[in-house]
Length: 353
Image 1 (tube, rainbow, N blue to C red):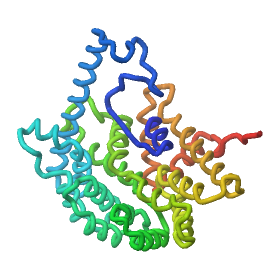
Image 2 (image 1 turned 90 degrees about the vertical axis):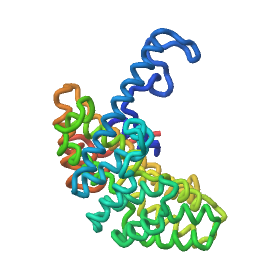
Image 3 (image 1 turned 180 degrees about the horizontal axis):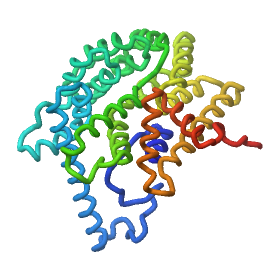
């Protein structure tokens, strides 16, 4: 979870169940040789890493098969997330492309729970990442399910920007700015997937997601690559300082909504958009920098409690975080709740020049 939070702060959520060959910031791990120098130790490490990756993919494929056999929407949605981006491995195991596909599973889950915005968002995300899928119908359904969520227009905005249709871009930005929220349903989808895996735990291969802590870490890693969309289109649409005053106002209004979003990633993007539209030395720009500093501090401080000094308390900590995620939709609110539980300050120490 610490890795997850730090990556979110950088607006680049990535995850791998296998330990990398290099340490943080690109430093070689202890005992590693210089790049380009092959050693028996490196070969053994690579073989071990490959074996671990194969075991993880086997677990992921079998978990998807088990969950896809169930009839409830949450299980099918979780199976879709597990199968997404793992089709090639699944085909190698089965000797043919796995059926149903991730997209088909997500569509079935949406049909079973048509008013579930979390599942609808996952369906839209998987559709946007599958080239043959036309997002228009899925995005329209998503906007019907949660009309107040400005994020539901993100994929449509990307298409308009790709077509260089400035009029359509302005129209979509206006619709996005009317939204009262900017949500990716992170907490709800992670909880949904953890619960689905917990329900079939005894039917899955051992070694992965076998405890509360491991399930939360594994699901968070999978969800990081499938729930949070890229912000490139939105940042590009709002980046042009010479844009009409009307677009500038729309982007400013939208950035304020994003800063209250349910994910830290959306909040950070909102800060970036507003910051670019303000004078660098303005009072407003300094206020944004301070709000961003507070958010970063809260996330980092709360994440420390996910890796306690006493390892046998990790599952209890994971259950505590999941309990807060069930109760609150926003990531930042979960961090605040964790800090309050441990009687920690909610704001970082003041910075004096």
